[in-house]
Amino acid sequence: MAPSAKPGSRTARLFVICVVLFFSQMLAAALAPLVGTPPMTRYTPDLGLFPQNFALAQLSDGHVFVANSEAIMVFDGSQWQSVELPDWSYARVLAHDEDRGRLYVGGYDDFGYLTADGFGGWTYTSLTPLLDPSVLEQGFADIWFLTVTEYGVFFGALKHQFLYQPDTETIRTWQHEGRFGFGVVQQGRFVLQFRGEGLRAFDGEDFRPIEGSEFLSRLISHAVVLADQRLLMATNIGWITFDGSQFEELTQPPEQQALDATSLLLLDDGSVAVGTVAGEVLMYQPNNGSSKKFRVTNQHIGDLARDIDGGLLALVDNGLFYIGWPARWTMVDSSAGISSGIYDLTLWNERLYVTTSAGVFQQMTDDKRSSAPVRFELLPWPAFEVWRLLPLTSTQAMMADSYALKLIDNGVSLSL
Image (cartoon, rainbow, N blue to C red; front, side, top):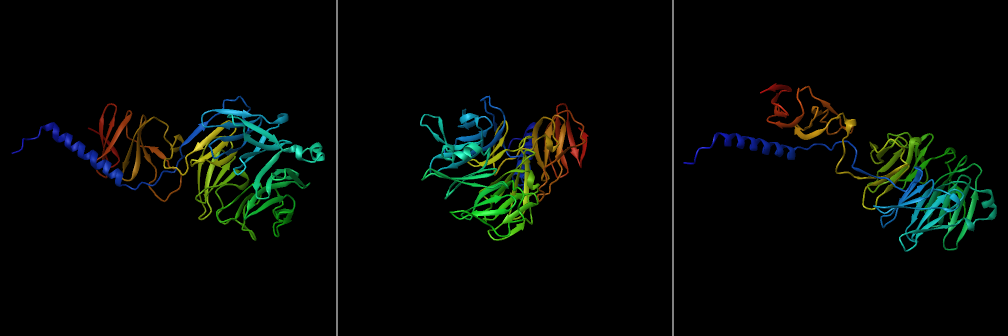
């Protein structure tokens, strides 16, 4: 006959069984991913430059370049350095030409490119000496758009459009008193907005009007080519698409005002990341019209770029964020309703419970189809710092606070 069990060992075995059953339920439960903020890391430059940033670009070797109001900042993952432009010009737009190993830069009354100097630094070469002296004398102010194409590199100012051809070291110039808008490569051709007129496409020789685009006479702030090669434009009349022949209003637009967008970025899965003036990033899927938004900062998002190792880079005036995306983890912060110290998480009846220094918070909804941000509410269970909540059945659980062990029975807290 086996020896009889000691009284304490039976209680210990019962506790172990409860714990095993609890974690088995956790593993088996299909909890929908929480809608929260993806993991983010902030990088702040220590160069003493004025905190006003406009654009960013990342090279294949990992170096990140930031267009700043005083210089170009370079970040290698651990250290920052700066590259000044001539005559106190500042950098507004950047574009990487990987084939030639150049980072093109658009500034104020100046544009050119950066190349590595072989000693860990960078050399800036201005292209403006190639311009006609009359253009230099007149000035062209800011370069707003910069696009590398098969025809050369287009530098777009307010009333000037420059086409730099690296093979011949020459620059062609167009002027439009009505002002230019965005420029982007769509279906192999460079499409440019002539404000007051509509869109034109470059055919290798000149810009030809695109029929039916006359209604797009006001500034188009941003545009991106979607995975299906449609052009998505943020306009004063909303989100407009162009498939190369027809213009249409987007039937399922992003949950974001078009003119509040600060940056549009196509991602590998066909979705579009939209930076906003409110410091949020909206993930928009054109295939089904779904949108998911999360906050990065309280500043406006200056620019977005894809990181070479996956994820996103988001630029703000006083720094740079790396955002894990697509995110296996999401952060649920105080905006979700929990404003106290978190001690433990418990999954009970497919709903999340959080034990904290203020009591137990319960997830508000268990609807797996909901895309609303997750919210928690404090439950009316008197306690002083709850450390653990141990489910026993679908209606009962044990709750341990700093001074007492209590039974939760059908939503009621009972002292033991």
